[in-house]
Image (cartoon, rainbow, N blue to C red; front, top):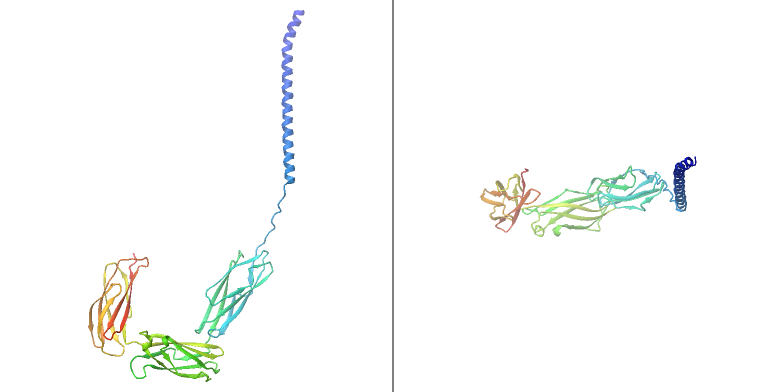
Length: 366
């Protein structure tokens, strides 16, 4: 019986040992899990504390959007005098909820300078663009533009328009003075100057191209109309045939008038210029030129020459008071992206006078 107990005890002891070992492992695992959970909780608490210590940036408030509105975008001066200075204003307002910024004001010409007090405008604030319009010397209707660029997203570019009708208060007749180099009184021409509003004025000064034109007048005399007898010295023009006369007056709304003039030259060429269209490089083009004397005088052509060598006079025939020139044009190779070429033909006469005839050629588009 003791043997049975011993044998039973021997079997029981190993079982109890295994049970105790399993229990110990479970207790250890549980302790580790609890420890891990405790570490996580501690770390979370620490991070939360750090978060409470960190400064919190305030969110940016809504900036809003600006909106520019002009009372009017067009100003019509109506009738103005030539050369006069005229001012106008363009008023605007920021009806948006954000700050309006005027980034740039551009203009189409130097005749419209402007002033702007500042570039930033709060919501509800008003502003003014002051514009000065300097009128042209010539008569006619004029339109000028300005562009206002801002940070208004819906209307970033506002166009402003200025209109004016330039009306001359002092006019002249004829519209151009024509002089000649031959004939009785060919160097004299009459010019009538008068005020449209019949206000009296004086002629203060007269100047001209190369000081070639002169006239007698009394600067102390006042009248609503003057008739000037002008005279030209063609030699002072140095073979130029067009110019202008500047006449200063003291009319209340006009200070100067400009009168063009021309001199009939001795010679003219028909056609006045040589044109070649759809040219091919290397080809030869034939043309005719007629040289005429405007005063029906007998003349001789002594020589011809071309600046670039593209033009060659192959024959010339005299027919009364004119010459017929047969010319050849040797089309040069293309040398530029503009697809054109040019030259100048000079024709010299026995008295030393010379005229130039220009050539313009255009290559065929490929």
